[in-house]
Image 1 (cartoon, rainbow, N blue to C red):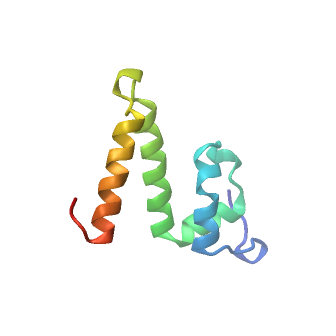
Image 2 (image 1 turned 120 degrees about the horizontal axis):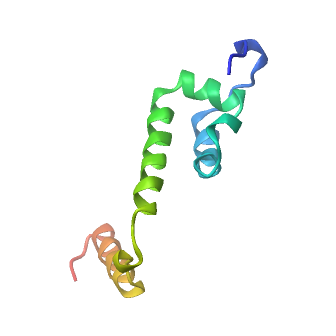
Length: 89
């Protein structure tokens, strides 16, 4: 999409990151000039968006047999919390 910079409102990186969930679920043709402009001006946000799109593709390839159980997820979260707290259980 080609739009003159002075007609497109700017968004900052924080606003962009808040949009990423919606962007990952939508068609890039529908993103609009504001998103296009920010991505053209901010290579780090472009990289972040690409990582989230790649993650979506990877997660869509996980089969039912590979899904984590609730107990496994809880164990991982407990371990991470323990590391964050500086303790070792």
